[in-house]
Amino acid sequence: MLVVAGLVLVPLAREYADFRRSWGLGRAAALGLTGLVVPAVGIGIAAATPLAARPWLQWGVTVAVALVVYSGAVRAVGDAIEPARALRPPR
Image 1 (cartoon, rainbow, N blue to C red):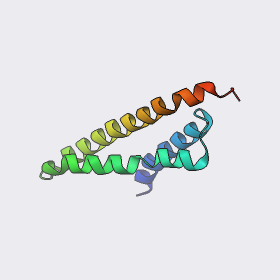
Image 2 (cartoon, rainbow, N blue to C red):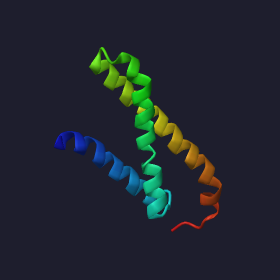
Image 3 (cartoon, rainbow, N blue to C red):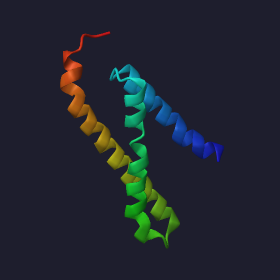
Image 4 (cartoon, rainbow, N blue to C red):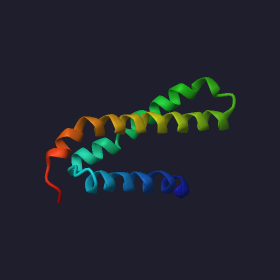
């Protein structure tokens, strides 16, 4: 269980820190953006449900879909806030 937590929480903590540092987001905004992983995993689970008879394939599809959905969501948010970030002076 600790290994799985490490494989999930450590990258999410890094992502949160990157949103704070590189994107200049506040705590709540960075946490909310990082939290988009939850619905992304939900979409992955829903997409992989028909593969329940083959658990390894099911989890592989769950992870792959979650990564694609999360990456797309983060990119969309980044594109939406880019004009505001471009206007802000560098730190």
